[in-house]
Length: 164
Length: 164
Length: 164
Image 1 (cartoon, rainbow over the protein chains, first blue to last red):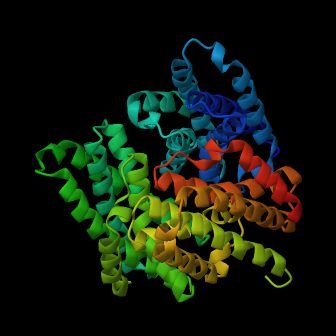
Image 2 (image 1 turned 60 degrees about the horizontal axis):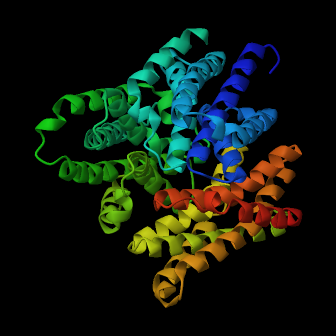
């Protein structure tokens, strides 16, 4: 993993922000702290896990379990502070778009480093960016944001792509 | 992949027909064009992706990204024509059964070529045939067709198996 | 697989008990026998399949397809007997907790045998224990038990861990 440090930085940032969105969704579903941590971790690592399984790489958080600690800390933070937010849904929307703009380049960079063709690189960016949030919305039984906010998602993804 | 051309033909056919069912489901959920393409691709490659991840093969659309282009074209076609259909649900049912009868032999052939035992070959046929549609129905929050139409599914699967 | 026999025994037990919970969920959703077998197999092998895909091991039921036969027998048994139960939901809750206490050590043992660090070992125990039931609840469109019963889950998981 040495020499890939900006890539790792992107992964950490997207894990943290996606974990925040997962914890906010758990807060909207009025779960207990176990549910917060569960949904936060699922959202945080879901997209990257699928990317790594499809590309047959070692899954990124198996290589570096600190990722899960970051997600857990984010979940616990939200557990104790979410009630102070004026609108959890609006915060969720903004964070989800922000996480997407960070996760897409992380996915793109991984696929690029593995020497894949550009359509696969693009698709891996999308999978890393969308699938965590999709899992979060399915488990919380909400209409997936990626389907309600298609245009926004595409805009964020393209905004994020060149960073990869 | 050379020497496997009938197999690849089956894969293309099942990708195209499953993409049509995914786009029809997106149409029933009144999504935008991004949603059409997303659900079409998910339905089209979902079953085969799971099959390849379980068998530890290279995922078929990573080896051949044209599959995703086929699914995207099918999605866009449905986006501009679905409103002309008399009954989208009836069309969806028929196409889903047809896709199953094509995807099962595709899955069977892959597992057979990899030298697996017959129970695994059968299960891989079922996974390739059912899982794409299951993902489509979960994401669109509908009762999975595979559960509503169990007998039909089994009939189609057995009709398709000998082709593999 | 030789020399791992207690591990295999745990896997069989968790497959059988999870299959029973899957078949009970199918009974609550009034599915036909195909639906019973489908949900039972999905619940029985879902968690372990995800564990093996993430750890890049051969998936346990591909190595030993008897697991699927065990799940199918459990499904058919429940199909013919579930109507005699006084409360299917209560039975489901108890069996789910019991399956968890068996599946967690199975997951822990696999990750331990593969030489992973302790956070990964713990997470693999949780994935093996929770994910089958989560898939069952998502496909049957119920609120996931893992989210409704967070504390119970954690208790069962910790009760089961030392056995691993």
